[in-house]
Image 1 (cartoon, rainbow, N blue to C red):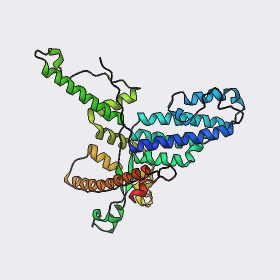
Image 2 (tube, helix red, strand yellow):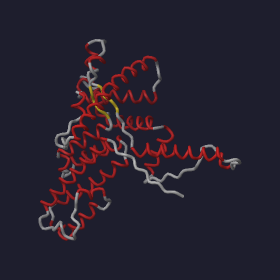
Image 3 (cartoon, rainbow, N blue to C red):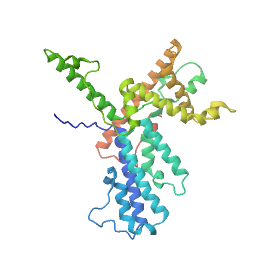
Image 4 (cartoon, rainbow, N blue to C red):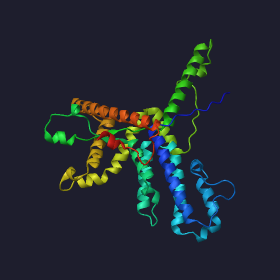
Length: 337
């Protein structure tokens, strides 16, 4: 028996999100130290640091330090401790969730904070702005194709297609790693059967070797099962459609009123249009007309995505020269506009 640990490299956007979460943790810890001047944070020889946010017991260790003075803390200081717990869960969820799940989780946090008596102040920090931008860019980007991709179907159509929403739908890196490992197991199993001169008939059952995949909960089990049976593209597109159906409820209600879709913001209109495109991709009729329109969309999408990757490479080169920093980050919306 041989045990082998596998690691999947993080994508550019996931690294950016991790950095932004760490900056938010630093902000909250700084505010908590200011609000708890009676607490000795260096006591015990193990000071609380930003690097500890990846630990499952990060917020619990902070709470233990504050227990002797907990009854004297202001509600705003206690809210900061809850913020550390939220950021710890957010950090761990980044490795567990795909782009759609993580974005929905972030939006839920913002809505919950808006209705709270003591809203999370880290949501107003520059790092949180980067966090939300990068999380959205794992899901979709809005760009404008160049003049070469413009249409000639009249001013109205040209105006309507000035901006284009491009689904990115970044999958969980662990999914791809799991698929590769299962492919390797299948290859080793086939090689073993070919080398065997008299294979056991029980080894020739359909499906090959049996592999035990352990997951954290039933929700993850359902996602992994769907991913392995239907593939990454269909799984992510279906989750994207479910998100759009829920998110676009308000836009649909507004569009039924006076003014129609013209009263929606550009991004809201594009998300509403994307819902129909995603549904057609999953359950469409496949007519010739839809095929031609999807071909035009793919060309424009590829043009925008190529520009995105060129810009991303330039940003990485600049950071390699020492020009990095969260405060000076460039958003993909700025890249593509």
